Image (cartoon, rainbow, N blue to C red; front, side):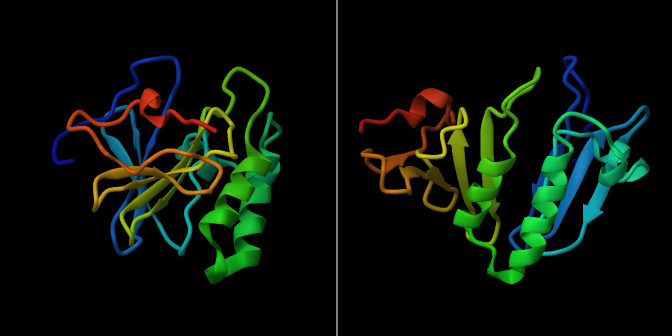
Length: 168
C-alpha cells in the first residue's frame, strides 16, 4: 500500500481483508493518523462487519449486540471442521450466519481461495446461486449446478452485479 491511506467515505465504517497465495492474511483499517494493520494466523480467516480494533478490545462473548452470536457460531463451525473445511461448508456457514434484519443486512457472501486464485460468492442472500470468479482464467461461472449460464470472460472494466444474470 505504500503511503496510501484508507479513509471512511460514508457512515459505514469498513475494513479490508488481504490474502496472498500462501494463505497469509491481514485486516487493514483506517486509524486516526495511519492505517492499522492486523496480521492474522491460522488456516481460516473470518472477516466480520465489526471493526477489528473494537473486537480486540472486547471479546465476542462479551458483546451484547445484534448478530454477535454469528461470530461465535462461525468460529465453532470452522474449528470443528479444521483442515477439512470446504467451499460448501463455507456457504453453509454463511447461510446460517447471514444477517436478515437490522440496518445492514447481508448483501454479498464471499469465500476466497487464495491458493487457487478463486473467489466464490452469493448475492442478495441467494445461496441457491453460487458463482465462481477465477482470477487466473479471468472468468465468471456458476458452480452449484442450479444455474444455467455459460462460463464468461471477466470484462476489462471488471464485474458488476448485472454480470451475475441467470436463467433457470
